[in-house]
Image 1 (cartoon, rainbow, N blue to C red):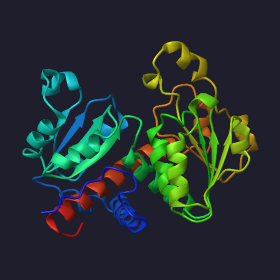
Image 2: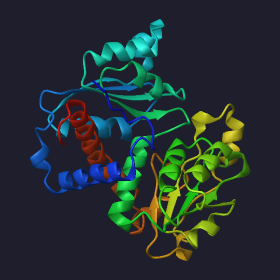
Image 3: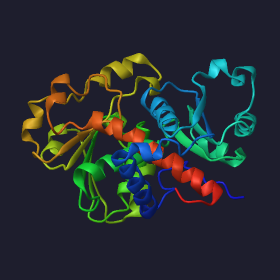
Length: 312
């Protein structure tokens, strides 16, 4: 039997994303219709890196679908601390659960897990490589607020070098027509060349503009996607402190932006968005976090239906 996983943001074609989004919207409209869809099912969340939103939204999603959850929230409490390989862990847990959500500090760990797992694996983030379920959340948020993907100008601001949420989202958005990306970062944290090559391979017409000035993105963007400077990706604290406050979005800075622009952020934030911005109707990052639960509910149903050859 073929097992379908969700390991990278390009694993789903636009049509499959649309199927998941339609299901997520139906869940929002009629949540009680889905309250027992996963009765008798079990999801394992294996998180070897810290997480609040991703882990809790997945666990809330499964519980709201009537299923159960088993969890490892710290590698030190698992047999990994005894030297067990990831492959052996996945094989074992796949015998207990119907679905596995994995977050791991090593790039490529989710792909490896997919090779060993007898049940669907969802990548909850692997190193600085990918975060496809955040992309699922981001796309669903964009659909809810902008009602389209074609013709958008998206400004990404902050840590574009290590930001796996950016790496995933920019590749998926490149599939759409007439897209423009404004990449705002200090030189040390520019989007990696390999990601730029992937974007151009997906859509040679995609426009990529690099700048160090936040104002360049604010003036022209339909979406401003803020990211934090990730302390955990730096080898020494001095480099982190030097770059941490490079970009801080304030209410005054937003005055030059379109009234129709939306501000997104995968969260958690540190200093990069002033708390006063929360009151601006263009700030949708907490809506974004809420939509993530519904998108993940739909993803769970979609993958489990595929496993059985059924219909979500």
